[in-house]
Image (tube, rainbow, N blue to C red):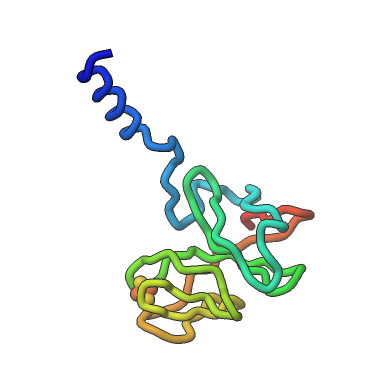
Length: 130
Ligand code: FES
């Protein structure tokens, strides 16, 4: 193998990356009734950012064992993906706006409004788009 062939091979590998589709906040093409997550994927008393659909990502919160809510994790200030709740508060890592995990409502910070809720239902061990 000459240097040119080796260099082309390395460039091709770099261009291919890991093959994982980039995730964007949102439903990722999921439709009503689709399974978005497993109930066990969302810790009780906290939450998790989970991949949904083909390329989406939602923030799921679980205030108690039987209740799951989902939000578009896009911060309404400048679009940063917010973190799952810690000590009962969802915080944007960029400018520290705070949101209520029970409602998505804005509690403090530069965000002009709360997070957008995505309607979900729990069916057995699944969290589904309502
Ligand atoms: S981007 Fe979230 S508070 Fe600024």
